[in-house]
Length: 465
Image (cartoon, rainbow, N blue to C red):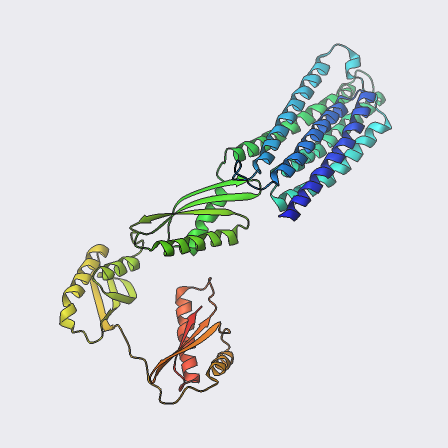
């Protein structure tokens, strides 16, 4: 952060120095030649100097940390400075237009007279070279530091490039006017070329005023950044689908984004769990948008299922049943639902026939299904027994077997036993981008291969860390 502030200060100070030099040169040459184009450029550069001084002040003030009076920091001062620069430029454009119209309507031939010298061409060419370089430098640093004030300065000096080019064309036309036949159409155009170039400068300034003014006002009014809004909404949908986004507000203060989110969570969650989930959401936003400050408000609610799968599981839980391996088939006869249902080990089917039939009826009614088929299986399975003792180097054997299988390096290996029953859990890093189906296939295949490689150690189960 300090490095960014240093870059912004150096860029702003450089802008001040060059604006001072160019303003003085253009003012001297403009007065000496009487060129309205150069005078308008001199006034433009003088206001740029004032704007650059304002930018330097704004950049330094914006770097101050947040305090009790300004809990969101001081970054908005850059937008205020950009708005002030816009108003100064607007005043410049109005003065230039009034002066240009006055000269064009004047009956005095001297009003259009311009005394062009080598100095006039030299100062405009130097101005062009300087503006091209410093506008590129300012725009690059503005993007790196997300500085509205430097972006405004860069836009000003980009406009200076075009306005200086217009003035160069204007004074060239004025210089050539003495070489053509007086009172000819070409002479009429060339003698007024300097005034026309000043009008072009004014039009360029007005366009810059519109762009910068709109950006500054939108930021000061905390207008929503639609692109960032969509980005955050998609981020939550892709990475936190279990917790729907109910509200989102984003405001930018300088180069910091402040994000307020309302997230729906099941009302049954313990407050500690909800807090942990909120922290995870804040970390997710921080990783995607470095430097952002996120506040998550938790809204307890009865989350309605948004898919047949979740609806079926919710109905099962209501009847104290557990289901897995759900499959849905759109047959000619209608929707068919297949599921495996777990019942307590040792339970009698007759004791569970009523909730099973109630489960089937509710699923058929809610999904308008043609039929629901249930495969019953015991909820608990007994771990296998192993007669051989646990080898002393069992952990290194597991790591060696994982390496032979070209599997990811385990993050942890834990062996649990009770009598002759043993189970070994091998944790590997999870790939957030992998699908649920692919992860299940990967873990199942690894568990089977690891069990085959170490048949006498324990039941091998590979899980994600």
